[in-house]
Image (tube, rainbow, N blue to C red):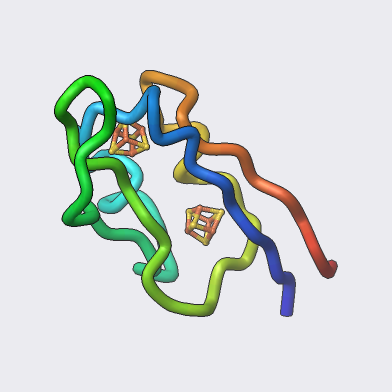
Length: 71
Ligand code: SF4
Ligand code: SF4
């Protein structure tokens, strides 16, 4: 199965939750931390990312980068 990894550019995240809802693997959640603008950035909280990039496509603030690690 495909595998991937994401990086959240926390300074851009506005906690809208669109990526959380879009992720088919349900590996994202809003974190407890706050970024410099006072929003709680998204984090990946468990294994299972498949690198589908749905989260990055949904994000209005380009706050997620996706990397495929295995086809
Ligand atoms: S790349 Fe796909 S599986 Fe990975 S966190 Fe984003 S939406 Fe979820
Ligand atoms: S879609 Fe983008 S801005 Fe919205 S919660 Fe996810 S990473 Fe943050």
